[in-house]
Image 1 (cartoon, rainbow, N blue to C red):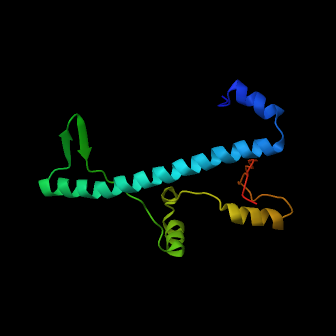
Image 2 (cartoon, helix red, strand yellow; image 1 turned 180 degrees about the vertical axis):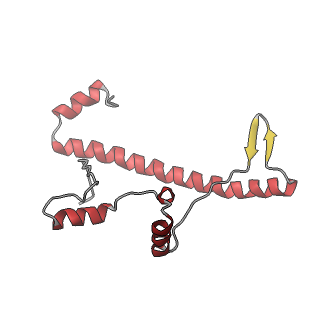
Image 3 (cartoon, one colour; image 1 turned 135 degrees about the vertical axis):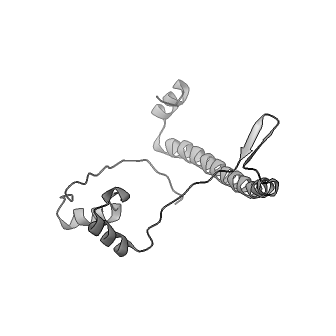
Length: 137
């Protein structure tokens, strides 16, 4: 599904590379401006959320309804490997491999690929995505 209008598609088809770069840059700059605005809004919401958590705690409740909305306390957990060698040893000793989520290091796979003459490590795939980019000269 293309987001280009037929008029824009025709304009870009007939345009020189300079026009394509300029249109791309304008849209990218607008996107970046919106991203910055969204980041500010997210940070503001986080700061206000601190007050909300304080109010819930002061009322000794986990949720409250107001004007058709429900505010509630949420919680999420993250697991962090603090000592990779100790964790690896635990996995090997206990055979509790389900505790591990596996992903290949892109940088290390690329280094291996170069060292091995273009051969990937066993069990690893590589996706390459081409993109068009514009930077300030």
